[in-house]
Image (cartoon, rainbow over all chains, first blue to last red; front, side, top):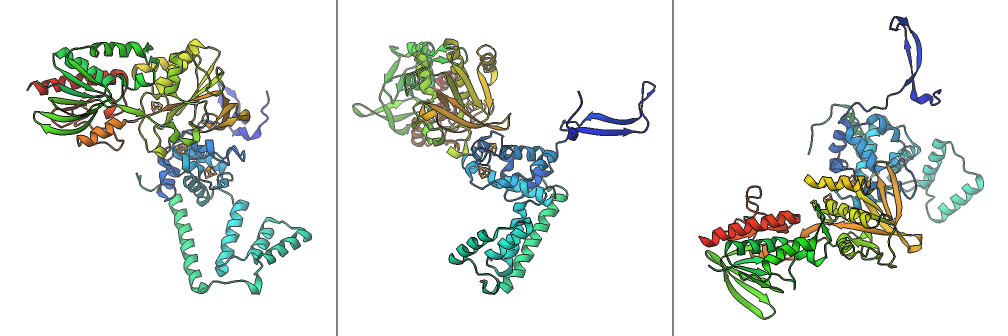
Length: 241
Length: 345
Ligand code: SF4
Ligand code: SF4
Ligand code: SF4
């Protein structure tokens, strides 16, 4: 039977290969990629455990109570979003599998049902976010629309210390290459004007003393990100409790 | 020699009293309820795991040695309300039907046992709200009377689920310990039901199966001979399905990594063991150390599990932690022997 799923097939080129005296050099394209998990790498686990958000990860005993009630998994039907499985992959350090969920893991809506029910006191929601952070700081996660929005949001907020919603909307449209039809734009603008959220451009609000606050905050955030990147890339931190 | 006071008339207490009598000592057996036999009697346990011997037979054996025995004075509906040291023994106050009564005793054995976890505290399982969600001690009575029927409509269930570790191994309710018998008793119940009613389907939701030691045999038989099915995952919630006619058990099948929402006609909760009210009261009265779980801590639990550390005061059965009946009976005997040695000195 021909193999129809190319992603499963490894093409191997052998310049010189003899089997039982017969020359079989050439292209071999029928090697199926191995599905065997061959390494238990504790780097992810150590990193997650070293984060304040992630320290409860080692309590997890894989009962599935969190996933059972997780609204992403059940109500919204996003089957790939499985907090128990994310934790397992992080526990055994199966990075190759974990990175497949780089786009999914951020979908948690922080309803905290999992934390409410976990019989072992795992702060599931925080741990899942921490695993997501690992994927992000190690560069395994491509920037998703949600990430781009988060970044635009933060930059917007940092500009004056108050959110400029109209500008944020514009940035979002530009980033995602979207264009809202004129009539809808008008309706949106009107409702924003009426609800007092159209303070933009020269009319934008600002926070008093923001000129002094901003550099401090920016530096803190940059340093935090750098630190997290370094710990994720560098040697695993010592084993904690 | 003054009698030895035995507090609690369950398997451990009965065994202690019977053993004291056989040694030629006098036993004063005090039980706060109006009957002897403890939790097995109260909840009409059916067959006892793992030998599937009727509970009545096992209890009957112990009761036969105690009831009517001239060396055992049984006081039902009676509690110990005060205690003072009166070396080598104690002076205790008993509160029964007739008002307080002082007694001199040469030694005391606490066999105050456990209480079943109140499953209502695990509110997401709907116990107490949905009539067809049962606690497994209630199912014991049904199996015993061969009336396994849905309380809601009196009809026999077609498909039954067991949920293990209810109120055990669960920080949300503050009970991190394992109940030790939830697995084996649930599996035993499933086997009993499949024996008598092969048309009923039995599914057990588990995290891991703890049928330790020789009990493993029953676990194997349950699958191989009786077709009991096991699903790995802890149930998250139980709700109503099919217009309230059935129950929906929602969980994750962790082997499938998928949500599972299966309708059942009956769901049985394997509620854990907590230190009994009597155990808590006696620990206070005798100033005994209790562990973080609330059970009494023996002085040296590994080499002398029946010694409290107070001269003349001994412990037996589930007062010191979850325990099966044979273990409780053995401890009752051990405590009786130690009390006898103390009283004779
Ligand atoms: S907090 Fe996130 S992971 Fe937890 S149940 Fe809600 S959506 Fe699922
Ligand atoms: S509920 Fe808690 S212990 Fe169970 S799988 Fe989820 S995180 Fe792990
Ligand atoms: S004996 Fe079984 S049901 Fe009871 S707590 Fe232990 S694992 Fe859970």
